[in-house]
Image 1 (cartoon, each protein chain N blue to C red):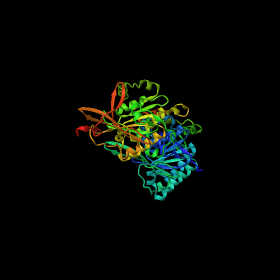
Image 2 (cartoon, rainbow over the protein chains, first blue to last red):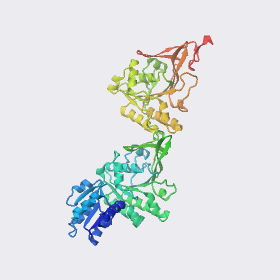
Image 3 (cartoon, each protein chain N blue to C red):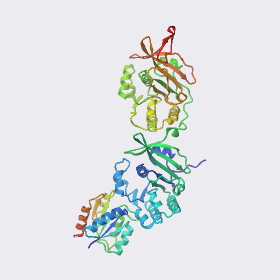
Image 4 (spheres, rainbow over the protein chains, first blue to last red):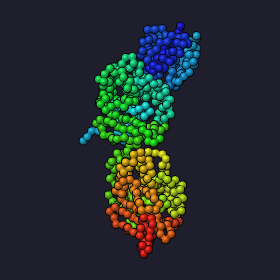
Length: 119
Length: 481
């Protein structure tokens, strides 16, 4: 079973997306900012990260940068879900494997996750 | 010399006027009001304006509401620019931190985020949730105190939003430097919004309630005119000059014309010729002494037609910029909004002679008629101070009749000159009658004059000699009594 880390300071969005991913057969971990996401990535095996952009302590772009700078995580796919900063994510294809504008269709997100994981 | 506190401009013109320049930098304010009262709009409008002024803003919510929903809603308002979000305008949710780790953790988080984003303005939405999480009122006090302490240290101004109307003795109120209350109440079928500065520590502010509107440009605040202009903004000219009315016969009755910077009230029933005298007054405008017609009933097209009928074409004056016609429908607007618009028009056009047709329309816009006297006093006082010579009209209800009602109590004390116009029946004919009742500090001709309107202009002439009771509307020849 693949493990997905959902990172968002808005717990409702993390919860709703988490439930949908669990229903789709994934194991879901959650973090409310980039700093706690990195801690989780160092403690647990994660196959893919879905992150918000604007979060306290460390934003989505900073988190993706930290992942690319870590030799153990460098190949980990990161999906950005963002409202206002989606364009910034699309300008950084090295950081993000996919970018979703909020609000988005959860089924499309799950299909993209499956595609990125090859499941 | 008294030190002036540095201000953070809200960018909401009326609110900055109430706050005497804006929020005090490094201070903390509560914005309170029921759901729908406009707190979120005020806060985000202020945030966007502050970013445009070069500031950096952090908006933190203690509520479970989604930012995305907020952005969708804000995207319908002209001040909001999504491009700001994520850079100079940061939004974050502290709801989870509050739920999981409590108030101290929220303070730590916000302190870190203020420093990380170099925020000069912090907005915290959901103060009530912080209160609910606090074990005692002292914990709430500590939360607010620590938050404002950290923010002030960083030179950051704080807005705390709450949907509850906190009492004056509440811990939150005692801690903050200012309280801005937004409210909405029904006036008939219309909802009227108000803003009220309940507390402004160490800072002058315009007290009382002030009307406001929410539209696609966000919140607009209209300070009560009598508060804003409790003292006129200028001293006015020290030189007493006469200004022609555009009707030579009337100038003669007034001892040479109207005093510059004076206010004259034309009272009379519908059809007596008030608007015609107003047009004549305007037609005497020039580029050096421009005129403004601020009317509620006659559209500019109708005014031009009336002017033509009196042989007083004003088209050329309009084209040269010497005359402006500003029409304000009575179906819309708030009293102070319209008062402010009038003064803006005067400022923008440089008008030195203004016709307001009519004063009664202001009364229809007033939610609280008891204010009208103070409103008119402030409005006319400010116009006088700007050396504007003003002609006001007031439509009397009865076409004929002895009763004369003033638009507001003590109105005659607000005006310098009073001209009474009546329709009078004499010898099976209706006549227009004019008499100058009062001219401040000047002699005048008190005689009754008949008023003739024709394509050759406006003429006054002695009439009704030997008649009595003319102003009552039904004249009788004294020989007949």
